[in-house]
Amino acid sequence: MRPTGKYVFFSIIMLVTGFFLSYSYQTTKKEAGTHETSSEWKQEDGLRSEILKTQKTNRELNNELKKIQLQIQNRENKLADQEKKSFNLVEDLKKLREVTGGIKVKGPGIEVTLSDASYIPEGENPNNYIVHEEHIRSVIYEMLVSGAEAVAVNGQRISHTSYISCIGPVVSVDGNQYPAPFTISAIGDKTVLEKSLNLSVVNELVNDGVEVRIAKKDEITMDPYLSKEG
Image 1 (cartoon, rainbow, N blue to C red):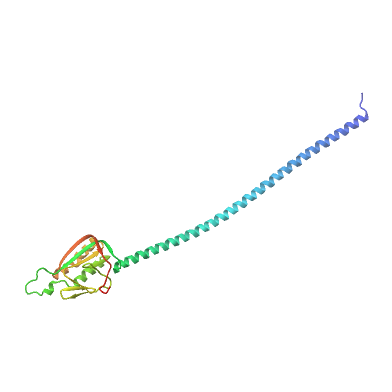
Image 2 (spheres, rainbow, N blue to C red; image 1 turned 90 degrees about the vertical axis):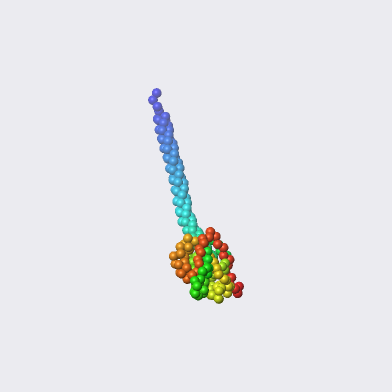
């Protein structure tokens, strides 16, 4: 049986309709895929922007942190420098007070004892065989030149204003009188002090008829300087 024109027409209609349905489905699917890809791109772009913004913020914060750390370090250095200066000032003041006799001190050193001559040749002037203030001064001067940190005569501390003089058979130290023998103590390097005195002063004292004894001491204690008026 041959198909009639009616059946042919309906077949064409159905074929065209199927084609349009298929085309519409493919187009819709493609548009949906494109829409999904575009959305992912926008999302990735947004995340990328957030990452870049965060990285920029981190760099700014890191730079700010470095500035703060540098400021703190500078302040710490200033404080350390001030503490060092304060410590040095305290040490310098302490040493100055030690030298001027302001505080009690102790340490190793030497003791030099000067005595009048035990034998005076007949016919000689006895005054030439006794200890005078210049003998004591020469010993003190040599001690100070050799690095003595503190000096005392018969236990009395010597300061930079001390005055030593002879009054007959005794020696006056800042108004306090002492008879011979005279013990001159010095705190410092005992080896250096002893060598210095033996090289320069001892021979002169012996030639003047003064008896000299030097003793090294592991520890010598000296009270603060006190004048007669004090």
